[in-house]
Amino acid sequence: MASRRAVSERDRTPVAKVALRLAEVRKVFGTLEAIKSISVEVPDGEFISLLGPSGCGKSTLLMMIAGLTQPTSGELVLAGSPITGPRNDVGVVFQSPVLLPWRSVIDNVLFPIELLRLPRAQYLDRAMGLLKMTKLEDFADALPRQLSGGMRQRASICRALIHDPNTLLMDEPFSALDAITRDDMAVELLRIWQANRKTVIFVTHSIREAAFLSDRVLVMGRRPATIIDEVRIDLPRPRQIGITEEEGFNKYVRHLRKSIEASHVS
Amino acid sequence: MLAKLKTSAKDSAWPLGMTLLLLAAWEAAVRLMHIRSIVLPPPSEVVEVMVSRYDLLLDHLWPSLYLTILGFALSVVGGIIVAVLITYSEIVRKGFYPMIVVSQVIPKVSIAPLFIVWFGTGTMSSLLLAFLIAFFPMTINAAMGFQSVDEDIDKMARTFMGSRWQIFWKIRLPNALPYIFGGMKISITLAIIGVIVSEFVASQQGIGYLIKLAGGLLDTALMLGAITILSIAGLVLYGLIAAAEKRAVYWQAPIDALETRL
Image (cartoon, each protein chain N blue to C red):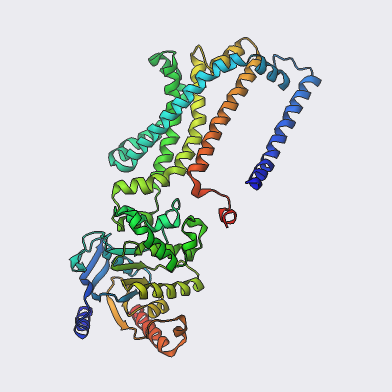
């Protein structure tokens, strides 16, 4: 069902290159079937959200795309090559900022450069640019504990972008923040995305967040997970937080909520 | 900086004042109750002995100090190496680690005479006993530090293709630093105990030997002087480690650094 939709998607926009392709991905932990079968195609530069209740397997799916776990069966292809492990064209933002407490903000942002054995000097300007973009340039030499929760998560987004990956994977990155910071971060993220135009796979259990950010929202049902609905969000960009009060936006929110509720009943 | 000095002076004023008060009470009690010097000399007499016989005290302090530091250093190096093995080798973790833990039930002081039999009454026995006692908390603490890395940090490093080697040097080791210093602070005091006990049992030099000797001569003032100088040495060693910790583990400083910064 989902795969057929993805194919028709490609037919409609034949110019868009496919960045990520999942074909009948299944994941079983022992006797627990976490993911039944998921097939998706994500065109280059798309902002796509995986929306679903906690424990539905969306984070597991994301970790498979990150190359940290392998699927039981099925195929994951990123930029034309199968995913066999972590790779350097992917950046990951986790639920918590996971900054190293002994490193300054700038050294945290440059951490992937060290791990990937790239020349640090060449990336220093880029790191400062990213910090500037996220309004952290005054805190480059500060330690993580001197930053607020929102600032830490912004730093971790800079870290995920430092090596200029084509794909950004985000695992409920704003769920640990308070509601006001959360809205700010969503606007901020869109601004960064608008400027860089990466393919973003965004995992969330917030309906509003998914609708506000995404080009397309995939709704995942309860375990074992499948994609039960797919909604294209045709709202104009760049989006400001004001659109969340408009009827057009709320129409999408209502639709998504209904999809999720339907999955509860079945 | 000045404010910091002021608060640290304020913080140490209480315990310092209390100590002086207790010493004064001791002095007064001994004098008023006419307690004999053999039983309990007044603090003034202890200080007098420490001044007049400082060369004797120092002569015995140096070998003890030397062995303490050497035994401690060996336990730090050995403890960290074993902790790395525990972290990375399943054989060591499952086979030897329980053995190390169980061996802690043995009061190591009781092994001192055995060491004398094996290694003689020389410095070797003192060194080994100091090492043996100090080794355990060092190992346990370091192993805990290497293994207590946040799961998400490990995940993060792996998504950026971090190798095991990189993860050890850039994550596990700095993560273990606070634990290692915690272990060092315990180990240094234990190393002192190890050296003193072995000097009690059999030795011709060292502060432990001097304490035993003075006891035999009923020279209580000298005994208390030796104990005092040993305590001071222990305090200094502990203080050095605490100072090094403050510099090395800068990210956990409990002060509100943001305020002093901005």
